[in-house]
Image 1 (spheres, rainbow, N blue to C red):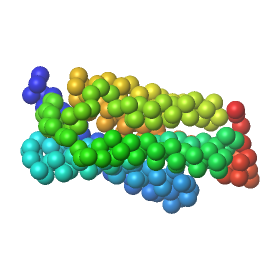
Image 2 (image 1 turned 60 degrees about the horizontal axis):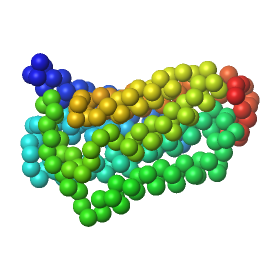
Image 3 (image 1 turned 90 degrees about the vertical axis):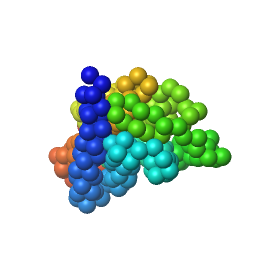
Image 4 (image 1 turned 135 degrees about the vertical axis):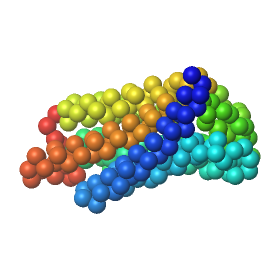
Length: 239
């Protein structure tokens, strides 16, 4: 069983990196067609997630040492910066869907809040990262020695997007972002010491996919709304 998992986990992370590359191309195409701020931010997130999974997949090949430590440090900081941007993407999608509350002030505040969350890893580790090697199911990675339990910031971000997804479900009659966020919450809440890194990484991929699908849904609603301009604040049918 261990030998099977030692193949499945690295291969799973590598497959996620490839699929996130595909989503990256899709997100860029959506941005070129719709000129959506959400689709400008999401490619940045997908680059980070792809890098994260690639380092996890190649950890055992690279082996313990200075190179993997440096790659892991970049992975840690990059992940900490971009995960809060899911909040920005969710609010931008709400704005495109015509939610009155997703106005200019809320959109600016979402950036400030996301950047505040992104700064936490830098502030708490200002003296440097204390990284230790950990191996689970064939995945060799470096993790913070002082961190135990689930990723709190990631779960906070998931909760915000979860709340946003409820509004989009009623407004667009679109439940998939709600489902994707619920999966992300579950995947990140399970301690990696029990299940490794693959469930959390897979759940983040699912969330990114559901955000892309939601963007496509908002475009469909905008087309069927005729001359009404969602971007100018005209609400779509719904709450």
